[in-house]
Length: 319
Image (cartoon, rainbow, N blue to C red; front, top):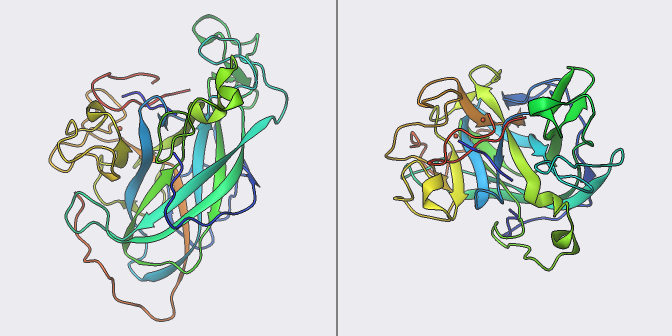
């Protein structure tokens, strides 16, 4: 797989820009966690622009089956963009803490009823984030690592930069499980593509959002609370049939289970059909509701990175 760098629209609420990268370590109220703390320099990631993606996520079972009022969701992103130059040309140059602004959307849905599509959308939150560009190419990174930035803590060279973004969630109740999707626009993809008229598109660096990915951790290795509804199966909206495990048989361009009638294929290791599995890096917070409320959708069982694994299925980008 090769995971590459959408903006959800309907019923979205807009908030002032927020700074990405704060590593929130509190576990109070956490009901699902696959975020690695402390964050490494970078993680494998699912691209949007390069893989024609509009939304990406997972169906999650919480650590408690009781009804919860969701309060916050932290998502790890992987930024491969540079202020000038580019990671693939090995010419990346970025001044310290340089960033770009991008609206990113968190969608939360009830569990699937048909095993293919998400249930009722519970909330859609759009927030503008200041996303940091990855650091400049380092002279310490040579040979196969040439052009990467050097992380002093781990003494490791990386292409992308991992950073957390945080969504505050209100008036959203869940019981047992829910589906989470991240959406944003790139130049050519997303639910409302930006297009090629943006000034950044004509620069050597291109637009930062075209090199922004959703970071991945490993299940069960990095999952400390909760679990996936279907291990090894994730949710995605992409315009290209080959980036679905079922080659688009269950539909194109809509946010759905990647492999409703196909075997799980989000494995970390070749042939990608067994654990550990890649999962989006999410931390979900909730408070137990004083009074449980019945679900509006019946919960059912719902029925993927090294920089490039296979061109025949979605790709995950690493380091």
